[in-house]
Length: 125
Image (cartoon, rainbow, N blue to C red; front, side, top):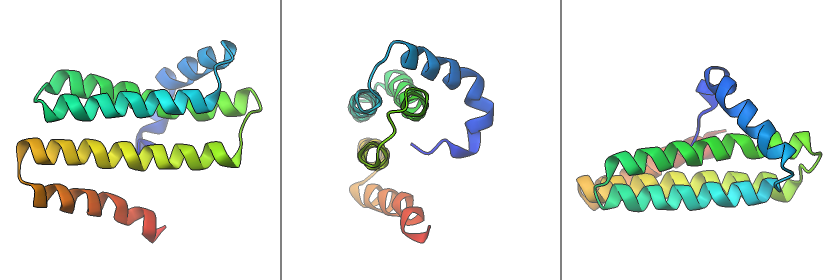
């Protein structure tokens, strides 16, 4: 999930959350994996038409995604592997959630189109 544009607005929420996780010494890659799990559960909830549950899990996934970097920097555990894992997690959750929503509420071709358009910005950068 890409929340870069909202980072300053959300900073008051995610920064204390990330610092709390850093204080607990939770490994940043474990937080990334929790983000993937929450994102996967979100996709399943959307697919089964549990929209509020899906949205809640997606927000949790996003907060975990924002927090993992804070934890890595705060605890001096930033690695290239962690950066790649975080990027892959973002793309995986984005594709899974978009696909689940599109397949559950429209037709599969719209799902393919949404996922493709969502990933285009990655290749343009």
